[in-house]
Image (cartoon, rainbow, N blue to C red; front, side, top):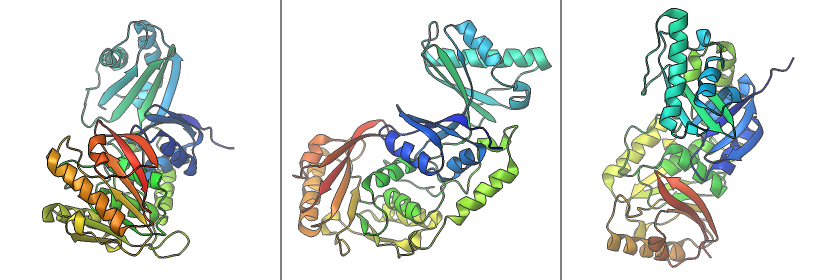
Amino acid sequence: MTEQQRPGTAVLPPGLEEAGAAELAELGASAVKPLRRAVAFRADTATFYRLQLQARLPFRLLRQLTVFPCRSRDELYNGVQRAADWGQWLPPELSFRVDATGSCPGLNHSHYSALQVKNALVDWQRQQWGQRSSVDLEQPDLSLHLHLGGGLAQLSVDGSGESLHRRGYRPRMGLAPLKENLAAGLIRLTGWDGSVPLADPLCGSGTLLIEAACMVLGRAPGLDRRFALEVWPDFNGALWNQEMEAAAACERQQLADGRPLAPICGNEADPEVLSQAQENAEAAGIANWLQLQQGDCRDFQPPPGPGVLVCNPPYGERIGERDELEQLYADLGAMVKERCSGWDLWLLSGNPELTGALRMKASRKVPVSNGGIDCRWLHYSIR
């Protein structure tokens, strides 16, 4: 008998909804539907476990507990108390937190919506046991997510725990780090599959290159971390171990078709930041496949191409002076036009004026958000 599929939600970086939906479908999720900063899906338990271990793009993967009509604070309060077997899910010795999005009449502020859920739960606990759980905003045993909208309340549990973008290989970071899941999504959007060289002339702490190597070499991002779902009352340890073994078995030393991985090259001017990139690559287990060197991007010599260039230069929002950055972009544009004929350049831009200094016309512009900065992932064909 086939296990019933449950509804779930993947929380994603803005701009990666379509790519995230495709990734979830590849890993076995069904009824995949891109939303705003999220993807709705359905999955059985094995698939839900697989998504947690292998999906590279989400911040979090939520499992829906229930949906109920909600047009007032009282309906939310009563609906939450009936939403699940709280005696199993939230005994008083466990801590919890509630996050809320959306609105309904009388509940237009996410903080008060979350407070109403918290009150419903601790009141229920006091009636049952005469004691209540504590709220822990940092490391709760159970993390609940409420979404209000369309006259409905959707209550979900977070199976991920700590954000999935934290892979564990990056203890040291530069001044303006790119989150790992955003980096993975940007690489996915390039279509790079490891068969041609990949190079980053301004590689910083190496996140784009590390995520690219991990992707084509099948390194599952979730193998070396703990998950909130491991303490759920219906956690299936045997099935979890089975999916852990399957995820570990995806790791390989070459491309999926048996060909060797093409060169992956990084260039960084700051020796301390380059050291961070080397340490991060070691921690991720892919240092042998990365060629990292110190040098100015103006002097960068790409490997024999054609191939794919990726780049996240400073925007002027957090680091770098304006005049210096304009010259940097101008010199970067001159370098790629001189040395990278036949390559594709993908550049993350948070400042259109600076990007103009490249003196190049983008053939594609993908809106994304990087740390709250409105950005574009720009594609240039260098001919």
